[in-house]
Length: 144
Length: 144
Image (cartoon, rainbow over all chains, first blue to last red; front, top):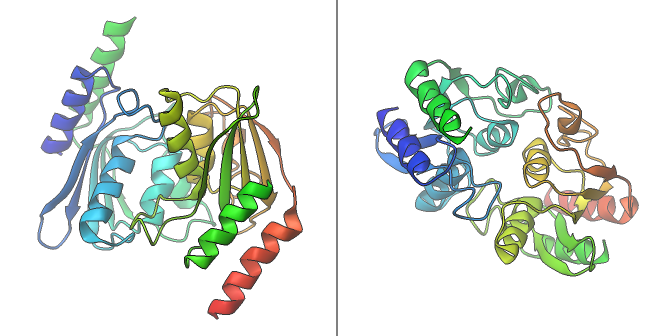
């Protein structure tokens, strides 16, 4: 989660909403991919940290399935990223701050609770919540 | 929609679930991007036709926002792609077959009906439904 927070801080410095994500091999602990949001720099509304980390880790593994991999992300994933986590069959999701407005795990559509969701990761929320939340608050305060 | 169906057929020939998507400039009618699923060939569980088309069109426009663009897709988008359509601020969504099991627009989490959904495209479903559905049925029948 420290590495995910560092990615979020780097994203903020680049003018992106500060969210960071890290994908780890659940057995060896090896970091497979780390990314921050790149929406503006990549010209891509789907360039959320989670999606970028999933894509990079999948390419590293040469497989679209990331069974036995765990994702650390500083903010509760949105519905797009939650569904991507399910599609990639990620084992565990650890996230920082909850997102009452845009989240899709404990808020909004609660993607993993849908009967149409075929793979549900184990979910652990609220890790380092205050640090992840402070980063976002500072970012948006500075832009107002 | 004919071009989207052709992309779906090409995807099937490559061993991918046959779904195709085309992004069009809503004013000029110019095709900005066309893609079929590339999950297996790209080693990427998020490589759905819609996401690939959104990414390619955004890069072409050098903007993460695709206001005034319309998406044609042969199958009802899943929750990941529905949220991506919202994030990219696509104007209209035209889709072929509905997807009772995996869809996220008229089924499952009904992404655009969530109060947390900040942009809702106009939605027109059931276009060329039988052709899009037949393609999928044939593909899965051949694999059983």
